[in-house]
Amino acid sequence: MNRRDYLRQCALAAGAGVLKPHLAQAGPLRSAQAEGQTMRIVDTHVHLWDLSRLSLPWLQKDTPLARSFVMKDYQTAIEGLNVVKGVYMEVDVDPKQLVAEAEYVLDICRQANTPLVAAVIGGRPAQDDFRKYVERFRNNRFLKGVRQVLHSASAKAGFCLTEAFVRGVQLLGENGLRFDLCMRPGEIGDAVKLVEACKGTQFILDHCGNGPVYAKDRSQWQRDMERLARLSNVVCKISGIVVQARERWSADDLAPVINHTLTTFGPDRVMYAGDWPVCTLRATYRQWVEALRAIVRNRSAEDNRKLFHDNAVRVYGLT
Image (cartoon, rainbow, N blue to C red):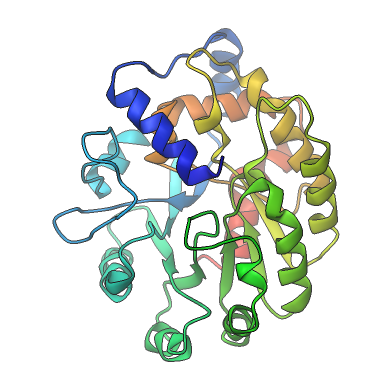
């Protein structure tokens, strides 16, 4: 099951009242909160959508995500957590609205009255007009990269290795822009080949490579993550996997995937990400932050500063 299908399943269940965010072990999270409550956070994965302006074909009607999630909602979600900066992440709008989405979010960044300071916009690297699209926004100082979701039905296995796609991703590097990788865990091998073919482009792997939280055997995912981490032009976001959690979950459920990712990529190549509001299918924003704090509480203060703040500033070139 790919991430999009899993999100659809979660949303339908939540909409039916079956699922509610619940932490089976709250004690360690409260302790972790106390330890890290003053740490500054850069959120490298903020989704926003205003359904009066944009269409998201993947949203299922009458499910929890099928409403607008705008900046005031995000600011409420992060209240008291010391989120000092945020990076917008594209939301897979109707392809006809890519320009409208980019203009919408880059304008929010320009206003400078919210945590949002940068954006990764949607794009289609394989399309003939991709160069023109990149040039349209290239000089916007808030633009940091491009993403096309690679776990959707329109992106079959191997799609990102087509000549046109590779050429488009290489173009991003030539323009000082990054590419966020969001793909099925079984296709991380494709990511390895793409990254190898685009040595001049900085890559960010989203959501711990969508590592399987409850799988009995994660060995293939682990090996593929290790192969990808050997390439110097890729870093990884610690995010997204909480949506895989069961109705009753604890930080311990997420720890194996997160710890393998942290160990494999090392302290200088990992970044915190909220994945809000998608994370709310299983947890509040605060619950996700506290779960991650609990998992990393025994790591050094320096490594945690890199994870939650410093690496994001460096990798995305934030000011």
